[in-house]
Length: 452
Image (cartoon, rainbow, N blue to C red; front, side, top):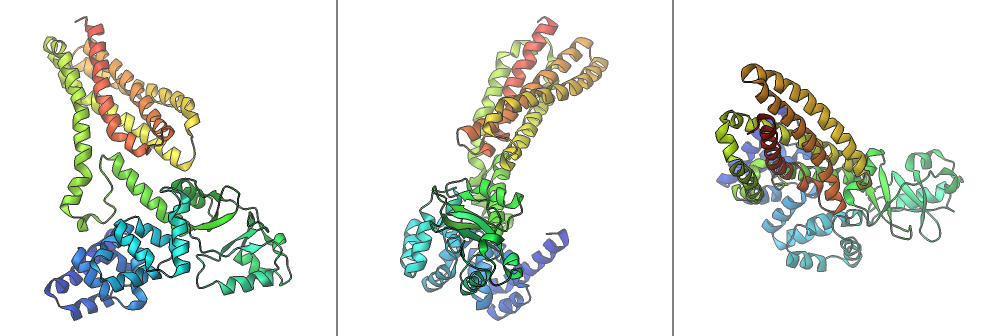
């Protein structure tokens, strides 16, 4: 949203929150009625739990389900906890199976089980099938509600099949074509189907299909869908049989969720998964405190290095002045490399088997960056202090940048190889590692150059 839209939204939220606080429900309902339907979810996200539940009950019935679906899964879970049992059961039953699974992952197990038991048989069966796939897989995020076409059908038969499923299918714009064994052999677009003559065989209209395996990583499958401009990606089991479909809007939702999580962890915090101003202070503290404790323990390495080289610092105190510059430059260099490689991993540009190629590139990048910064550092320091001090600073910048870029480029690949989120391994830990190892390099170079 633009700054103007954010400011406008803030004014609207304040105009709704005030009457809710006073218990003036008619005024709150009137204020909600002025909000465009597609903006209602943004309004509810910025209200606290009690007022969000009251505001949701004031929404027109024809808007309520769409607004609920637009909320993030954790906010859906909170809202469920604040609504009456009858309201909750109705909302849960009206959701699509894949949306139910997003919600179930945020609910206490006892509540999720109770809601599942209350579903009609067919809906419970489809939802349970999606829940059966492991967390993090595309099988757990696909929709089991799809329209497939037999390869032997004609365009007229296919269109009749599509019309019969318009109310419950997740999408009809991209239609998987299957053989007698339900194996995906192609896809046909609704546009081509409408353009064809009624007797045109589906086998002649279909295009080659791109599919995702049901156990594929959800983020990788979603990125493949969006990067290739697909409206929908068929999901198949180990025998290539069609079991579900991933639509482009669900792919975008997965990527938004994953990228928010990665961005938070790269900054040394857990993702809030909700608007900042509606997040309780205690939750913000919890999202940061564990990482701060971990990093504080890691920072003791830096203290240990300084204590080991205390005598060196006492002999030439000017060395202490450059410690922040050197460890800051090293940390920034490592973070740049880690962020670049993490992004390349997400896009599929590099794989874990490319580790040697990545290391080779980052060594050269680090040497070039270190050479540029080291030359500048040598020149400036030599003018202000002494050529020998300048040599120490220049050589250290060269060494630290090379080391930091290499480690920063390698750590995301190592994380992916051991099946850990690369974002967890990247910036915070790289900064801690580079601080300690950079100081060791600094003092060893100083001892060698200055003969102390």
